[in-house]
Image (cartoon, rainbow, N blue to C red; front, top):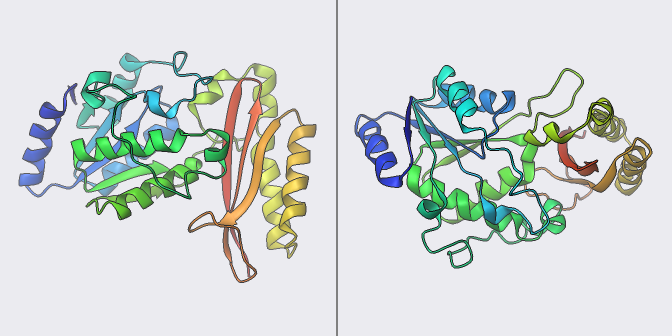
Amino acid sequence: MQTVHNIAGLRALVDQWRSRRERVAFVPTMGNLHAGHMHLVKQAAGAGDRVVVSIFVNPMQFGPSEDYAAYPRTLKADSLKLAENGVHLLFVPDMAELYPNGVEATTRVEVPGLSDILCGAERPGHFTGVATVVAKLFSAVRPHVALFGEKDYQQLLVVQRLAEDLCMPVEVMGVPTVRESDGLALSSRNGYLSLEQRAVAPLLHNALQHACQRLVGGDHDFAAVEADCVAALGEGGYTPDYVSIRRSEDLGLPQATDTALRILAAAWLGKARLIDNLPITLK
């Protein structure tokens, strides 16, 4: 595995691969890698001939009271994991490489509508930060395909819309959520949980599963299902931000004729803000 820190070196290698008609698969990350990231890497190996991974903790997507400074930087351990899993190129830019004019003065990319609801409403500006850095990374890497986990389902749709609207020649592929044996979605922020909180954490997935069973079983009182899920989380020790049933394709509010839905949730457990979602197919 080769590691590069600047866009010029990155493009020199990618240009060689593309000239040989090799398909480039890309996995953008913020590091602190876990088994969910490694699953994305393995899926990337099946989607392309060459696998590129980036590690960059993007300040633009963190709010003023969020954990940017405390976000774990584990580059040495991450590099070993990626090399062991067959990654061809690791791109680790510094701040000046991606934000040459500084974060505040940089050009921004916004995806209206999708960015302003759910997690976007709870974290204003977050998805503008995501869309901006992803646009920069797509421009730098020029992949044929980029892979994103479905755990961050809203982020996946934001990036897909971004690529479509800006006519970017990249396929944005969603990869199903990887979970622990008790159902907890893998996340870097699980490391913030105490032992007691970790024992409670699977309730988020369990509550969403129960809501799905109600909906598939014929209960279409969406507001009641959402409210009961919020109550179950609160009783179990969570502080919910939201539980919401939405259309899968665009996260719009579901209509009577919609059959492909998602139930999405974000909730705090101690200092960890956990998110999860599940697909729902109605008859």
